[in-house]
Length: 550
Image 1 (spheres, rainbow, N blue to C red):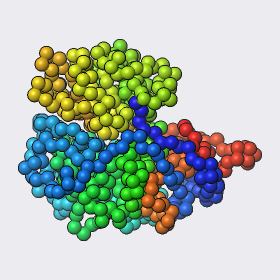
Image 2 (image 1 turned 120 degrees about the horizontal axis):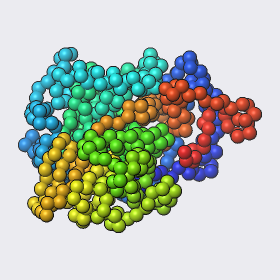
Image 3 (image 1 turned 120 degrees about the vertical axis):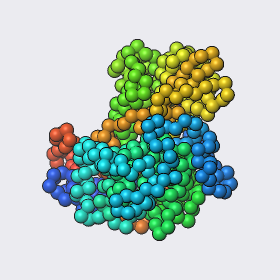
Image 4 (image 1 turned 180 degrees about the vertical axis):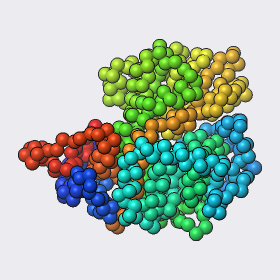
C-alpha cells in the first residue's frame, strides 16, 4: 500500500493558463530570488503566488462521526483518563494506555489541575511545567541554527508585518522546530494559539518556552484522549479571541471546528494542511460541497513530499528504532508497508544498514519502483511469521491486523511511520488474554498466553516524533512552505481562492528550495536567453510544468 498521492495532471486548458500566469509573474518575482541583496515585498505575494485548484479522487472515504455521538456534552474531569474511543480516525483513534507516557520521575499531576503563571502574569496556557521555559529556549536556539532559510524569511518580512491581524490557531507537533515557525509567524504580525496533533510528540520544555513568550499553548507529552480534545477546544473557544486562519497537521483541529463551532469555521479565511490524513478530510468536505473556506494542500507540495516525507524519514526511522529498542539491523528481516515517499526513505535507510527489506504495496507503479530499487514485493501474510520488524507507512487503516499480530514470532517489533495511528490494529490487543508490560517510555511488551512477546512502539502512533526527533533542516523546508502558504491565503484578494482545496504554486516551491541552497553553498546555473527561448521557459522559472513528477 502507498501513501495517497494526488493526480497532478491538469487539463490542457487549465495548464496553458497557468503557464501564462507563471510567465507574467516570473519577471516580477525574479528580483526577489535572483539577487541576494534584494528585499522581498511580502505585500506582493498575493499577486506573485497563485495556487492551483485540485480535485483529487478520494479512494478511501474518511467518515466524520455524527454530532450526537460526541458533541452532546463536553468530557468531564473524571473522564479525562478513561479508555474512551476517540471521535476521529486520526491522532487518537485507539484506546489510551492505562500507563502514563511521561517518565516516572515527572510530576504525575495533570497540567489541567495546576495553576501556572508565566513571568508576564498570564495564565492563558496549559503545559507540563512552565519552569522548564529556559531549557526550552535553549532547544529553540539550537533549532534556529539549522533553520537559516526560515530565519531569513522572518528578517526580510517582519518590517512589513504581512500577517498583521491574522489570528492563527495551530494543531501540529510541538517541537523546537515548530517553535521557530510559531515565533516567525508572531514576528510577522500574527497572534497564535497552539495545541498538539499527537499526544506523545510534544517537547514539554519547548511548550513552556512558547508559553513564557506569550503564545497560548495547550499541550504536554502524554495527554489522555480527553486531554487531547480539551486542549483543542481551549485553543478555539476563548473569550475575546476568534481565529481567522488554521494551520493543521492531521485535520483534527479543522474537524473539531467544523463540527462544534460551525459559525466560527465559516469565518476562517484559509486553512493550511500538511498531512495525508488531513488532506483526505479536506477533499471529502470539498466533494460534499461542505468546505466553506479555501484550503492549501501543503502535503502534496514538492518541498513537503520530496524532502520532509523522503529525506526526513530516511534518517529518523533509524533514530526512533535505535532509541527505543537498541536493535541491530544487519541481517534483520524487515517489512515496510507502503512504498510512497515515507516508505522509500525507510527502505533506503534499512537497506544501507544491511537489513533484508520486503515491501507491501497496492499500487502497481509504487510496487514496480520497489522492485527496481532491489526490494521484494510481497503480501504481508507471506512473510508475517519470519519478519523481525514491521513498519507501516500507508495512511490507511488496519494494515496490520490482530490475526497477523498473533502469527508474528517472539521478539518482533511493530511500529508506525504514518501520521494516523489507525494502521496497526492496536485496539484488538486490549483483550483480557493479553498482558501489556511497560518496558520504557513509548515501548510496550504485548505478551500472549504462551509467553510470546511483541514489542509495540508508541502504541502505534508516529514513531519518529513520538520516540525520537527529526532532522531540523528538513523541517525548515516544511515550515517555510507553511509560512508562505499562510501569508498567501491571508493576503490574497477576495475571489482568488474559492471554497476548494489548492496545491501550492510551482513558483512557491521553487522559492522555498532556493532559500535553502545557501546552506550548501550551492550555485544555480542560469539559462541564457537563447536556451530559455529554446525550452519555452522564463529565465527565472517556473522551470517545470505543474504535472511534472520530480
